[in-house]
Length: 309
Image (cartoon, rainbow, N blue to C red):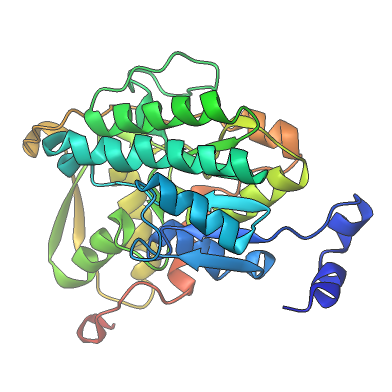
């Protein structure tokens, strides 16, 4: 890549006497990594899939950083299946705790920055509006494994940036939005839980939020999500409204979480406050309605031509 040309494109960073960092992205096959890989602001990157870099292998982490010499590591590798984590906690902890520890150790040795992503599930989810300073108390093993990963990273690399996100959706991966979108276009009725609340997070907005934090040399824990708390039902109703402009969509009916027996405990309201991020960067988070509209316009959601109006 032509770094001179790239530095012109990032004039604001040059004015701040910063140089364009070189990024190494882990978990390249995942949805969050896709947002960074396709964002022009992160064009100067090396993206490594699980087969190219298993973060649970400490030696492999050190070797990768010595070979690529990145300025910033974006750790997008994670065990994100909440139910599977409850059934196989050993594997969840290997990826979500041991893996970040290995990367933090390798970043410390290589002298590069680490951006690690965590989750709203580190909180018990009893009231919502969680701040970075609020006590953590995960209700399931997925949340517990992610919390341990945070603690290990902070212990080894105090200057690391840890970004907690929630209800991620975006191109390049399977998620709640892609699943429900397909149901809306294929079924006559969709029943969605209306008593679980949180904040959705568009992956492309995450990439821009991280860029803003890095430009300001942020360290420590930050929450990022799109603005506005909602239930999964409210989110689905809005998706149905947007899709109904061009497609026949299913009827959306509310139901309780009790209607879907789940052996894995889940927070009732894990919504996080993003006030710290907004105050630090001076950038408000786009609303979840705006984020959903932009996502649907990307064409990432497969549409059923037989349901056209």
